[in-house]
Amino acid sequence: MVGLRSFRLRIALLSATLAGSTLVGFAGISWWLIYDAKVSRLDAELETQLLMAVRPRVQTNWQAYETSLHFAFGSNSQTPITIKAESNNGEILYQSSEWSGDLNLKSLLPFRPYQLLPPVPTFNKKSPISRRIQPPKLSQFTTQHTKNGIWRVGAIAFPRHSVAIAVSLNGIDREMATIRNVFLISIPILLLLVLGGAWGLSGSTLCSIQQLTAAIAQVTVKGLDRRVPIGATDVEFLELIQVFNQMLERLERSFKQASRFSADAAHELKTPLAILQGELERTLQQVEAESDVQQSLSSLLDEVRRLSGIVRKLLLLSLADAGQMSLHRVEVDLSDLLNEMLEDIELLAPHLEVQTEILPGLKVQGDRDLLVQVLQNLIGNAIKYNLPDGWIEINAYRQANVVLVTITNSSKDIPESDRDRVFDRFHRGDPARTRKVEGTGLGLSLAREIARAHKGELTLDPTPSGQTAFTLTLPSEVIPRHGVSSIGAS
Image (cartoon, rainbow, N blue to C red; front, side, top):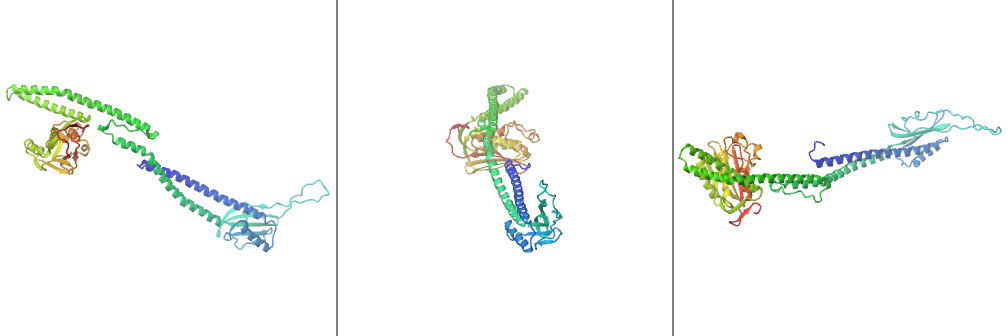
């Protein structure tokens, strides 16, 4: 039972086991008490009937005495009752025809010779001397097993004769067998009822945990302000919910601080970098062409532009986390955008084979600049992480009310451990795969945030070995044109 993974099943089985043990114990004790009571009542009647056989009788009287025993014991004729009477000298006075020779009477009551007890002391010499007769001796009642069945046997010894009565226990055994069968049928039924009740009771007990689990599952990065309502929760789970809500408060506070720091840093760096970029571009125009100074300034300008790109991505991610990413929604023709980018691929990676299947007129409502950034990021990754003499395949089509753009390229396989983290910020994956490839690990994360800001999604698709594929999904429903919205307001 310890190995079972289901807490509810363990509770139900444990309850059924405890209830079953109790029922079995109760049934066993009850069965034994009933049997003992029946045997005790039989012994009492045996004692009464033995004491009534005080005088020796003739043959016919012994037969009448035997017949009266059936009425005395209240048993029917199917229950054998036998007697045996002997004189003190061993002569058999009467023996029932069904008397079993296997019955052992000597162990019950050894015969004794007739004797008179000493006279009773008296002070009146004229009164006759009185003699006391030895009282009858009653044996203990025993249960004996013979070839004819099980018998309850009792005997009594009088001064001149002794009598033994044997009553078959078959009737009591049949009654006890009936009671045992009742227990054997009723106990499994009761156990099933207990198991069902315990299953339902444990389910209702775990209902609060299921509600808590459902509430926790709804808590995401965008829902850290949510709290699990206490409401009518059982008091046993109040502390758990309170601790969980306190943890959410700490997470929300820490996340806001980190997001605010990232946004503030990006905002503060944005202006100096723009000024630095402008100064470098102006100075670059004033230096001598193809000189060492021009090459140095060009390298510095590239690094400043790279820093500006990182700052811009951090600022956009911060705005997305805060639900404040503004979208300048216009009608965007993804088919035209992709066809324009094909020319860039031919310039940047002429060694790659490019295959396209782009359905014309794939229009969506969205921010053109941000969508261009998403497609450039996907195509840029397809070029950077491609194999020598590899290929790129671009498919764009409409399905129901969404537009899907799938960009597939030949590449090394992404390890399974990295597939769930490719959209994590600053995650670069396996160094063996990303070595000598420039990047910050922010592109895919920002691309997915932009897709989600457009009510779409960006996913990493399962592919055969040696390929990598990302699919951008965007809704194609019509939204009022030239509207400005944000994630939180749209």
